[in-house]
Amino acid sequence: MRILYSIFTLAILLGCYSKKDNTTEITNAISEEIKLDSLGLEKIFADTTLKLVNALDIKELTKNLADTSLFYGLGDGFLKLDSIKKTNSYPDYVSHLDIGMYKDIKAVLYKDIDLGEGNVLKIWGFDYQTYEACPYANGKVILVSSIKDSKNVGCVPFAYFHNWADAPFYDSFKTNSVLDKMGNLTIIETVNNGGIDDKEMEYQNKSTSTYRYKMVDGVLK
Picture (cartoon, rainbow, N blue to C red):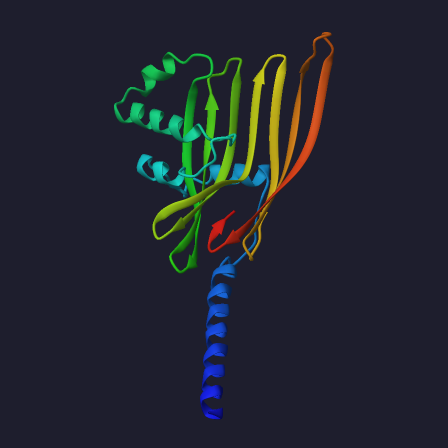
């Protein structure tokens, strides 16, 4: 009986140890901390060696991006422009640009992080601008898509700046973001906005917010 008890106890310990190893493999799979600010975003999108993301991949990568996100409509805008470019209609499209229409959207893949167990973080993003008239918007955003067994199970913004103006009103978003080795994503967002109030007085506001995501089973939540 004592021998059977010892074997049973050893089996439990080995099982716990194995489970701990699997967890460590996932949470420690990010080899280096990734920090991004506005300057970092400029460098990424200026890198001509990065792979461009095609329309088929965009459909998958943007799944599960919240419809309340500042960048929710970029996927559809990219697909529309991609279709126009493939039919050689882009020069005509640009010549007829109107208020609020996208002038161009580029999508690039920054890097893949293999977490093991079928989990991959795809770090990618959009560079975009609209027609140069009020309202006008431009910006750059890096997103993280959580891929599990080749399917997108999550998509969150990582780092971005976004500018919008419709004189005399404007909004400006900028972030400082860190994805650490343990899969914790921290985003410090600064928003500046201004305009003219009902009394025709100029106003300016500035606010800072912090957003945090934690990687759970290979997915940022």
